[in-house]
Image (tube, rainbow, N blue to C red; front, side, top):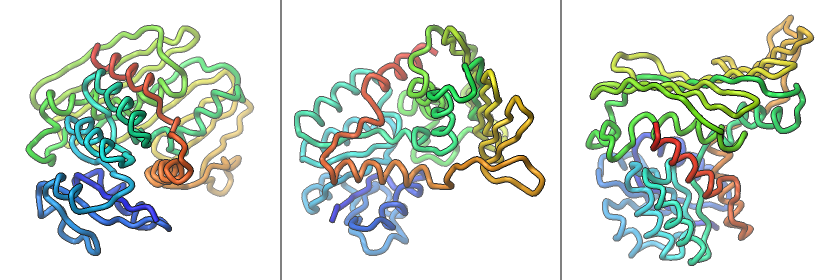
Length: 313
């Protein structure tokens, strides 16, 4: 039985906690948040407002960190120094040096550590990478990705709107798409960017040049209540592969249109499972702990590269 604790019961915890609760051979023994009201409604678990109290009173195998960004490395190291395996929400840190500190601690203590970069486990993105890796539709020619919406106004202590604590749009939002690009295609050769940043909003667009192809990206926190959306469209020699709000769609050069879920009269259905990406990443990490295998789905050099790029935007 894996004993799990989660710290930071804000927005993203709602994507992690239910997965742990539904897993077999897992028991969520404790949760922690400095705001007692955030833990109301959670039954059958011990509740703490001080992480040191949790560590002193609980025996846990895995800590799930869903704290604000600027606390990730500190709390990960503190837990791993107690011999606890750690899965942590993205990003690992705003500072490149923290990557080595965290991974060195994991190696020293012989525990598992993983940053939960969820797009690596998201079915539509997994299939996009598979299409690229196999060359099924020939060479990749171009791509576009967007992740745009309203500036968050709900975070504890307004930390998300504080650049020194969240890194704003680059580290909180665009990092999803950039991490996937580095994971799927490697490090870009160069980039060009434009940014419009004000106290009440933050928008930028970046073009990543890979030599044989390029990817245009944009990310935003608008001041107005623009609805959030995350999409992509990639042009291959033999098809356009798109995820634009209706699941993955492949527009083949032959005229066929393949959809993750097809309606009557459409050309075909993509054999893509409908799973929860957060569940995928958490199950993967738990299996690594059970099998005593260090998770290699997310690698330290990739995290460092992403931080380097984001720092230069």
